[in-house]
Length: 99
Image 1 (cartoon, rainbow, N blue to C red):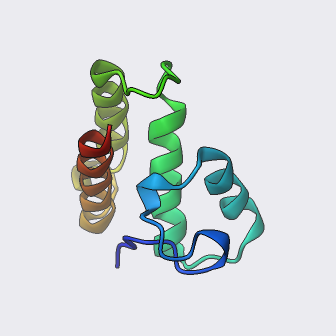
Image 2 (tube, rainbow, N blue to C red; image 1 turned 30 degrees about the vertical axis):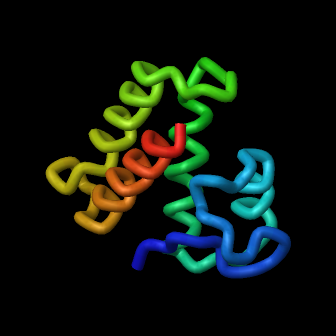
């Protein structure tokens, strides 16, 4: 199961890719999250932290490089699962369309 919105707390109902980066890091460290949600949050955080441009506008080439790195790491042919790979693709599309 891939979570589309955050299930509780201050950001309950917020789309995961819209959560502030510092809150994602806090949630990963502080809450006992379901494995699927933890994975989804780590994907978003990794995509964001791999970006060198911290402006309001996402640098398309940096986003694409970051996505490719994560997709390669979790590709089913390289030890990832289909669900993990699909989650990375879904979040990439969401972040790309919101950027």
